[in-house]
Image (cartoon, rainbow, N blue to C red; front, side):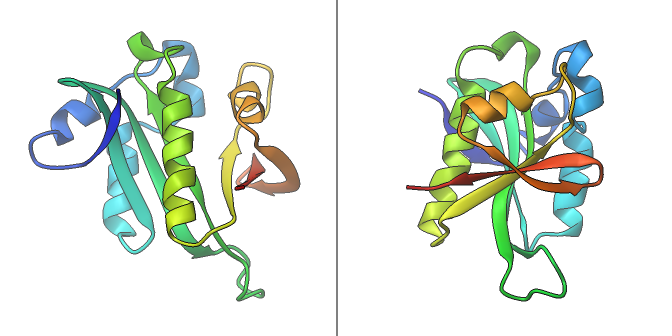
Length: 152
């Protein structure tokens, strides 16, 4: 059974060595880049590695309670900021585990929905996110589709 583990001095190098499939590299940021962003924004970033036994199978970074629209102070959002599943572990449920973990943490924090973004296009991760219950909101962020999943 996979679990989430905080990034520590003991696992940070292994996390940074995590590689997605070569055809996916243009759709995701490297883990090291995500960790640099987490370091710069610790008040909202929630970086974790996904482990199974002694293996790091993936990386995720959540965000919680960020102000999405500066002119709408009641529009606080939470969700999945980054997701990298190691190439050799794809198709084994680790991505689904990561999304469900973010949903669980958002529920624990009193949220009733989560958000994520993805690159549009047939080769991108849209089918994955749609299959897990995300629906496009009609918004974009940095050229990416914004998706929302209601939590029940």
